[in-house]
Image: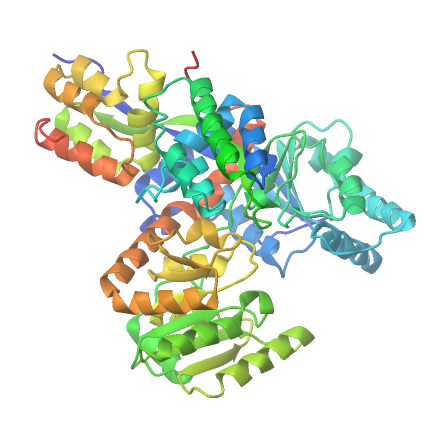
Length: 422
Length: 217
């Protein structure tokens, strides 16, 4: 396995204290002191690209800043191995896939080679966090480990292909604990499972504070006039995000109110279905020059930040969703969110407190109109949304949850008991 | 009268799903019947921790799910009226939840299964307790402390402590009485009904009561 050196420079928590109350630092220091400089090894299958790598790039320096000897190892594998693990990944998410016996053997063989490379590190670490299915076999292959191991599953395991899950389950059930992002992603396992929700980093280009001039400048560049209330949905051009449904809802609103709608999504050149959906969106938007369809490059974080801040209301009318970090981003910018009542959106959009949950196009149109009709209520929901993210969905909470996981695995955290049962 | 200062504490929690889920009313009943007491405690009592700013339509996870996912407001109302901080016995609470579900089953039958992803996921929480380093020596520093500690610390000292302490009083009332000799304020605080207040509303009400020398009800 290859160790990633770029995360070894500790990141101090201080810059984050601008966004969170001072007790957050105290909680983090208390929990990390209990760990007494423990060694933590994160293992995954890639150093760049994808959400897991993005999390580890930010989380590990923060863990090191708290005195934890956190390190990051990346699995070495050949093309065949990654083709197999891609199928495992898809199978765990419910797709029909096939993995032959010889492919399972190859999967174990690559895990074994990686184990042999790093056996001393793995045996001596206090905590090992193995991310996703690719390196999952490392624990059962590593004999006589000293520390506690957790399997961190970032994917939706709610409806796995039984043949794939049966094999993988044998590999992950011996771990001390497993970690999921949402309760609905979990399975029944013999060890404790815990939830660690995704989080956003307020210091990144996508989330950091922008001056009004920067917002204005981006809107000018993208030709978005700021003359009317603005609804913004940022998402891939994907049917599960229902961009055409948003246009239909906006059309209903436009019978009553003047407004603008921005649908901003990533480039769809490598995704045939994405191109098809983008075409449908352009078609549906063609009759209304108040609808702006933007195809942005993958690194347009500054532009997305500015659009979310320019919005009057953020829309995320998904009909299927994982956690929905784009909703978290919108809430963090102090905007009310109209979200589809699916997945992690239901955890973040609390009805009439941080926004509105909708089930239909009509419901979306109704809530759009309501948000404009009641600007004071919209402001209140925007304020509440930012506070919700501040307390529950910033990286500092994710960091704290990881420390709690280590605490749990070392026996310092206990099941919350009902105290008195007569 | 002076005794030890009051040291604010906090229980840092991590939610732990059991892996058991209910998609219908019947499965909901079975899940509640077979759940560990910690699971019932989590879903009936720890809901305010997830909504610290404002209590939603219903005050506990069971009632919220009945309303939002089963669309059964009759059941939601029956479950909402339970006061899990007044009733300390978790088995008594469990029985009352099951009774309400059985009434719903008798009158309305089993519901269709909710959509995938909208099931009730039975969970518990794991926690570790820490001292926050915020210390109160008198009424003024107590108010400062209440202003500055996390909402979860208020839950620990005001809500859970009424279950934890033998006399049923919260930690702050106990200290006001034994530490400051402020018996009148202590009485008024221990009489306050926190249930149905969000933790942030609770913070405001308690600060107001302490500022006014215990006159707020």
